[in-house]
Image 1: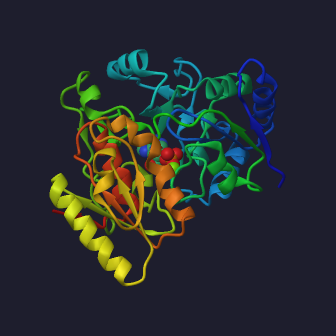
Image 2: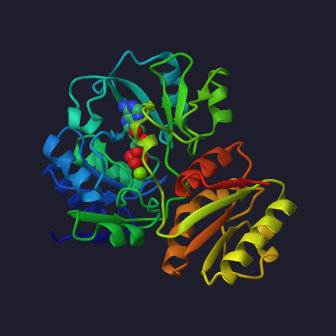
Length: 349
Ligand code: AMP
Ligand code: MG
């Protein structure tokens, strides 16, 4: 399959590229596009055959439902029984990194929703994404634009790397500035429940209902026959080729432990990558050190998280040791992604 790549530098000047992408969607094709969370791989959410192409391109398990992306706040045609809290959140936080799980209406085919009775809907905060959906005149189903299981792409280069020859079109724009996927909030239950932590924090959501909580399957390993509410939770995710381990705890002890582990691996002849923070970057004297961002400003870390995993893979490291982060605010989303990348290999010090 030939993949067209368009780089949109200026949304007005390059409107034709977006229109061409929208035509691909209208004709049942697949288009990767930027969003503020991560790049998405989209198809017409209402076209069964088109949606199947997403699952094939990514190698995504069919029981993992897709989030439906919209360009405005009128979602009555997609969902029913929309509770007041959902209306308030849509009013205040859309467009933005918040997906709401609602009861579906029958318009959306089963393949998009993996046969669930619910639908996840989000309005992305990216001008290219919004224009693409508007021009396509249909909601766009879009998971992250990577091969299933790999770290999500936060720039166009990584989409090209994963999806060339697998999709019809890739539209490039800015780097994703949130850098982790949307927060998924199930508002079909009371109190609402977070199924995936993301760009909108628990603390922000608690202002709407103080009882909102995080599903227990989010931060811990899902084992055996347990069926998580967000089917995607049971799969290995965000994993680079290298093995990942996390060391978490008080900074001085954490740095000491990482140095000890790194030295052992290097003595054993392995190439080691370290994901450090700005504050601790000079504490390591061996291994390939990548600075994620500042501990004191976690929103400087999220945009670099997935890219750092991929960059260390490019350097050919065998093992990546990442610093851990306190699980508050954006730290919850960061640790959720890191733990999955590490298949829950985490050392607490
Ligand atoms: P991705 O598109 O790769 O970011 O993954 C989307 C995530 O949203 C997956 O973990 C899905 O399980 C979850 N999801 C999408 N739709 C629903 C839904 N209707 N109910 C619960 N989880 C959902
Ligand atoms: Mg994904």
